[in-house]
Length: 391
Image (cartoon, rainbow, N blue to C red):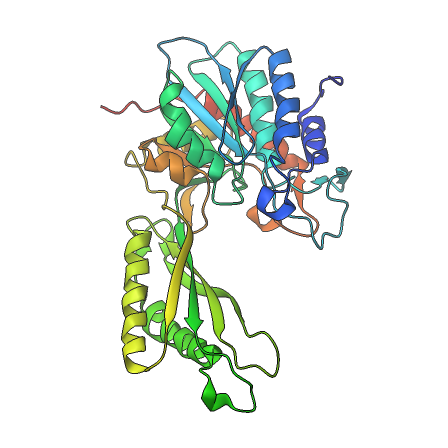
């Protein structure tokens, strides 16, 4: 084991050096495992208990536990180890650099910055006089691909821990503002099926691209434009066609065209209900277009993160942050995080962390060093927060 990091910035730099591009983009099995092994060794050296929690088809989640008192509540902090890909980056993605008060590198903002500050906060908390809560840090895998680590934690690991979180803090770059609710999604592909033939005799075939054009127009006019669902924190639901493809070569009438559709959900909406509604609209279109055929293939979804406890945990968090001079507001966002799965399990959950989402996934990803310091202060305060106890 190399010399332990002496600062949180040094810890973050070491984390950035590990290539943890999510498996579906990198093609590597368990890309987070080397980083998880390094952090497990560091946490053990610091005196914490570690557990590897297996995830089917991926590397394990890493759970780091600090038990203070069997009767004390548990607060769990979650940060994902994987990152998005590096194609097109203007900086060396895995060579961390500090310039002009910023740390650069893939994952610096999303979300190795939150993971490093959580671990550093835990180290400080364990040495402090005030330790009212048991603390766990979950370093999860596969968030950038349908949150497979968080799903596995809720579906498989939670019941086996021997304890249940009274509250969860999910680390994402919010500049330490508190997100009490976030959106979910359902995604599927719609494929129009035609009949191929030589393009010099188009009437002998059935052009799937023409049917796709009609399908897209219908979706825009009759479905997307009529979405009305809103949430006071998250805002208005949305939908969009995001990828379209079709045809094989210039002189062949296309037999297939495919649209990928992304429906963003607000709390209170159910993805399967929206899928059914679109299927009904497509069926009505088919009835008006003899010979038109459409197949649907649902490939991923996540529920929205709704407020579980009337907002008590978020309000307690804002108060805890204010106690150390951090002004935070409660809000929501339409994007999706691991928190969606913890909240769906009935656990009061919020999202907060250092950094700004505007720097996530960028070609020169970075986080301000001031945000790292703010994250340590904020997460330590949340570890010491009074957790609202539900009846």
